[in-house]
Length: 601
Image (cartoon, rainbow, N blue to C red; front, side, top):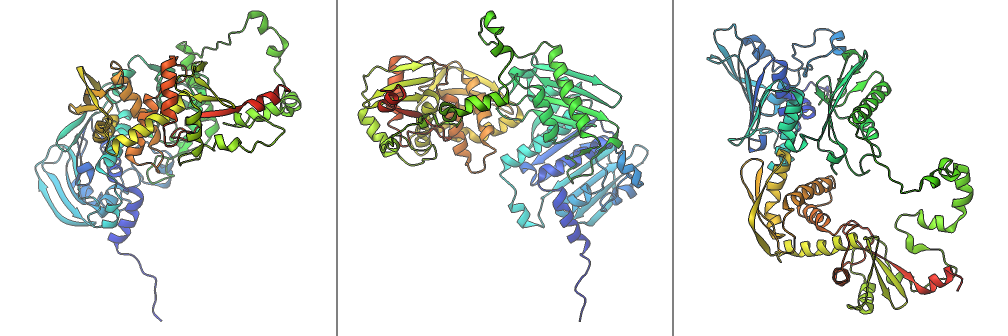
């Protein structure tokens, strides 16, 4: 019998460990930038080629390393920041576990150049597959340069799991921004394929936020500053009008370390309750500083998830601080109930129904049951069984053409008078009742099918702009838009990339009003990012849905008789007319005999 358990070779053990720390080029960017910060640098340059797959290089002017330290830095769990177990509970540096360089060296070809101010010459080390290939003295300035080349060259299976260059570049930009945001006193630059993407001069936090997120936030930032014996909270939150449909512009730091915390995000969202729509997200860049002994950052290899000794206290502080900042700047929700002053004094207003009263009265009503179900207005209680009910309405999950639509189309008369309710609904009479059409849901369906046909080979005509519009986006949005340009051309948009974050809108779809192109593009990108979390949609599908949502006539817009007739005609010409692209009903059917019964006739 032979023994079957054996120790793994160092290079294989390192590759397994590297899988936790280095998952993609962005992971290496994070680790290398944090090391540069820990080295005391005030100038840090990031250079990438081929979205980091070919090269990730970080150059800093920090304190550098001796020859011995340079060689030892690539060993697993080699660190200058932890000397005993107690140090784990008062960590003030960005890195501390000694995994980063060892993990990078296990899955890439690495070149290190480093020199301390007191040394006559620097050190050059070349490592491949965790093995030192070369080490020699070189002439070098004070600081360190680490170049990671050909990521996963020795693990082809993992390299195949990397996403497109656009996706990987976005991850790199995200990691770069998170570190650069936390240290505005340090100069940062990012160069991609020979072009400078970011050039962030030293300054204060507000200047750094505007450098990264754009000057659009200049008048939309509210200062947050609360100093206590337990913790300090500083930074900025965006005014309610700056809220977006995506949570991209949200940055939370604990002791200058970017963290992800659904718990603390909930505290901030609560501070904004009643000030922004429920499907919107406020901008914030908040810094929590507290005694390192009060938290554990050694929870996850990426160090982005931490545990507080007393998370309830931190939650309460964060929520109260943000609320106080918003109140201090007179940013409070305006509530207009449009009630007469005398009505306000009634008992029913001053003393709302208790849960017990509501249960005994409202719940007993069939009408309450009818409207407490989402999208179920057509289920009004009825005594008789209507066999033809389903002929006119299918469930929102219907994905194929509905035969009943053809029947409705035959009943629809193009010149019949239509009525608009609340600038949101179009009412259309039919032979045995009437339809209530939701104008926004319906127009989204119409545009969705139009755009689907456009990208399938029937491009929409472009109207050239007499005065082209220039639009400047955040870097992440610019990367996103550049990838979408070919498909947007099929949808009638002629947009040219004008270097880095600037684009010129040369033409728009012929049926789109000129003048608000910039706003349309910005909001379309927000919609696109909103859909991006849904993996079942392709890039093209997300774009089509975003454009349909953005260009659709919104609820609250008054329509002329001609516009209502066009909307109704176009809707019943759709392949799937009864639901919007995201499954919401476009219309509801109401029947005369049902109404007669409601009125006792």
